[in-house]
Image (cartoon, rainbow, N blue to C red; front, side, top):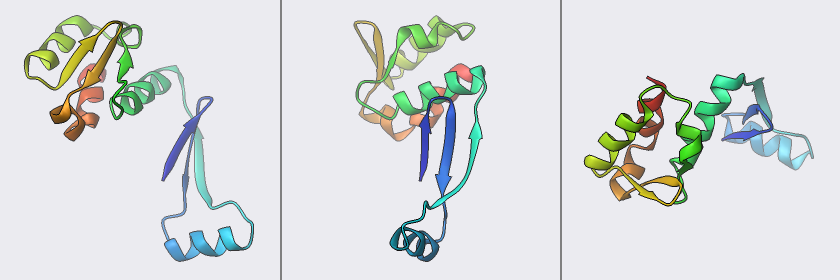
Length: 106
């Protein structure tokens, strides 16, 4: 499992046995972590947002070149809907949520 907060991403051990052993002994099962730069944080916001019904704020998309055309294409192929100031995945969009974020990153 991966987590993200305050510009930092971390992930747990892959081994279920090792994970459980550390939890049972009161230790943290984190395997490694990384600090993200501004561009990586922006992409992380899209990646995580497109995995939820709430989607992402349009403001988060505006930093990407040609974002309006990309968003329009995603709406046209029924992967994303726009409601108010947010772009959210449709049922089909959830199936390709990582591709939605990648569409903006190029």
